[in-house]
Amino acid sequence: MATIERFEDILGWQKARRVSGAIYELTNQGIFAKDFGLRDQIRRSSVSIMANIAEGFGRRSDKEFANFLNYAHGSVAETQSHLYVALDLAYHSQEQFGTTYQMLDETSRMLMGFSKHLRGITKKTPDSKDSTDSTDSPDSPDSQDS
Image (spheres, rainbow, N blue to C red):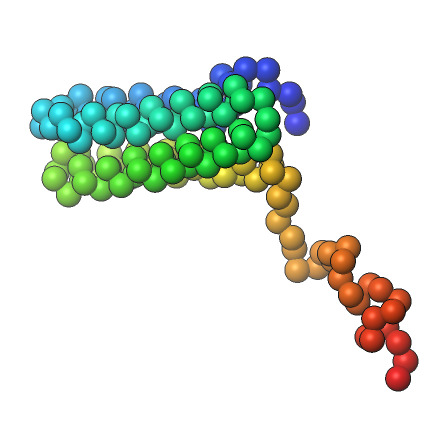
């Protein structure tokens, strides 16, 4: 994996930037543009996604960076929730909802994968053995003859 020199190099941040642009475009249309409360809240939550990624990167510690990626993940969920409110109020179409929701979902998966990578978490397969598995030990009851 290549070393990330700037937060702008992070694919999740790039995706979050596109999501924020899509949210601003969506909230500039029709009656959505006139609902100042919801419009401003969904904009803030979408901007918070990319801001948390950048801030986490600036912390220069993998643990802190992973924490900020988790905050960004929370902002994704908040933005998705606001999208539902806007859909219920008929501020946008089902198609616009689906497209934007999918972008957010992709962003979320990217962030959580990156967070797990930073924390050193790997997914175990059923065939993989843990080094502390007692059946590998010559002293375990399963490995001795009765």
